[in-house]
Image (cartoon, rainbow, N blue to C red):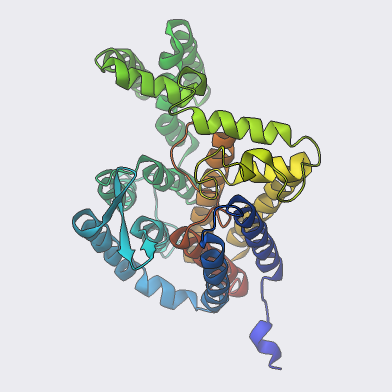
Length: 407
């Protein structure tokens, strides 16, 4: 056997990824056990195909990937445009190309393309990364992300759009964005949350934002402008909310509090919490979950697959899944720090951010602390496009380890 073939192979990342996929296949088998569907068969076929493709991608030299990144990015934009005209509408969103009995979701692959394009742009500098604190470079980087986001919002698909935005700030911070600029970008989220909770919370949020801005000891006028912007954004929340129709207000309340609509938008979350809570420490046993086997949760094999783990394998099984994901995320960050190739370093941070966002939102959805926005659990939820795209991300992360000594 050629030993060079497996030289510098990221075995840990491969093993943990295969374990996560195995857990996902187990969960899908249980969730579809009494339905007579072929979701499990499809998932296992594409899991094997994806793993092979992931390994092949890990041997792809970074210079070739960097050269092709802009071409891949523009092709992904073309697909996002085409799906608006020729895509199949599912659950009110025109996000899929229907090919026989399969569906392909271009936005899943656009995540990879956008990260690669952004990584190529930010790494094009003789001194390391571009100076992202320069306004022209900052705006160009943001534009690379906002182009696909704008097209995905037309589908519409809010959940996937948020995934794109979730990886932007970690990448910019990794490449040198100042903490002050990062906080100015994030602070409106604090103001909006406070305003949505009530006047007293809004005032407290503004005080906190103001104190943090003072700690940066930046230009007083710049800090005051940032605080004023937060006030305007937060104040406008109540005005915009009051202009919504009653049914629209009810939907928003249902997102943050499922109990306000237990038979509608809150149904899945309530049933998911029952399933996870009933699992106890060790679970009810494989194929023994009542919520899962009696189909209390519609299409559980997709976004709510995690509650099957909680019900049938209990707290121990649920925590084990989280540990496996954290190993993957930390390994990608480690590879980003280890590699001397700036392009692969940025790509690893982008992929780690995407996986972390998916994990936090999906698990948060199932236990009722995050809004339900249609975010699948990486490599566990059923979905061909999602599975393949995440395996390609892992493959590129493995490439960063393999070519860690190449600039």
